[in-house]
Image 1 (cartoon, rainbow, N blue to C red):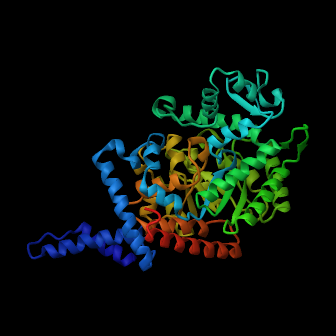
Image 2 (image 1 turned 120 degrees about the horizontal axis):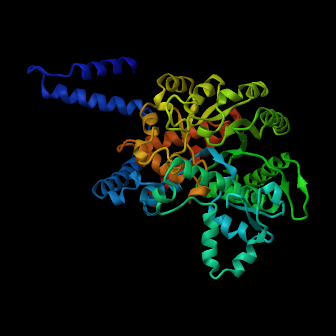
Image 3 (image 1 turned 90 degrees about the vertical axis):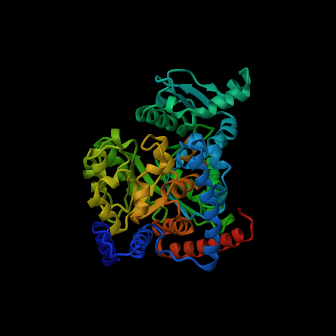
Length: 507
């Protein structure tokens, strides 16, 4: 391949120009370069069966049709639009219906407390008896099923959500406003979230609003069961969750050790897998706030050691979370990170920024020096050729989160997302969804839509999709035995899906 690239580069540097060189040699050179680029990109060397090739022909008819419609009419070009404006178009898209039914393998970057659709939280959690709301000094609502005003930073008294709803002039309008507490969606994001600072303040505030309510034991069980349902219904078979622990509590006022939250998740997972044998399950990445001081970080490391000893096959690694631009760089947390048990797998957020050669994108260098297993976001990786080459050589997967990067102000037009360059250069990538519940999404299909319609070339179809789907198992933290079973299940479900498409049951 390297020799071929050298030859093609020579053609581009010294193109055919003399009269003796025919038009045919020009066409050969042109086709050779296009073919080489196609082979170099993600999926370029993935072979398709006859059946898959037939599906690819069908898929490309619909994809090129949608892209052509968007080319003719910018107001119909979902691939180039902000997700909040594009979502109604995507929901009607034949490509999106295809992606919803397509087996998607695993989601490897998702935060548990923003994983469930806001509509479910509204229609179920907010109607649970005992939910209360208060307001903190910043005017932000806090939801809980217990009174602990000091701990929650509330400056107002708690009021029952049921009472507020019942006493409101319009309960439907109350519910609409309630959902806005935990959903960034707006038809005018450019006005409501005009800067990265504004949207991050609102985004992080949603965690403050909701998380305490989630850790109410009945809500915790119902919420995470719904999370599993939403993944399963979107044809995701496995997930690795970032989880930041809090203590669970119940209606009697009892509290439980923080590790009980992990135990509950493990129990829910085992029950769900028994009921859905083709669902591989979930595992947990312990995520801590990157801005913690040295003492707090040492406590976090100590807690992680305990969790990994207690749940060695379930708690699989460690991460630092929170807004990178405002958090401590990885370099400042080295002392604590080096105290992690030998062999700890790191899944570090790094490079989630538009800055160049600032502490945030240099986090990617430290993540690589710390031998991270995957890199979360790595949005700025394209600006660092040496790091990008290391990622590719060492096969460290980048966790792409397309919608998250757009909603949180890193990219406006998804066609300009650096993920397009990662795909073009066959950098290892997996498609993820980050915090779908906070932006009116559900599951993984919306992020796959942007991956194939915006970041992938116009002529990219099943080869790219199949590679991305199988990458999600390849770069997961499943054991070798678990991975073999996951591949078997995925290959079976993939073949069945191909049959379904050819039988006319998808398009």
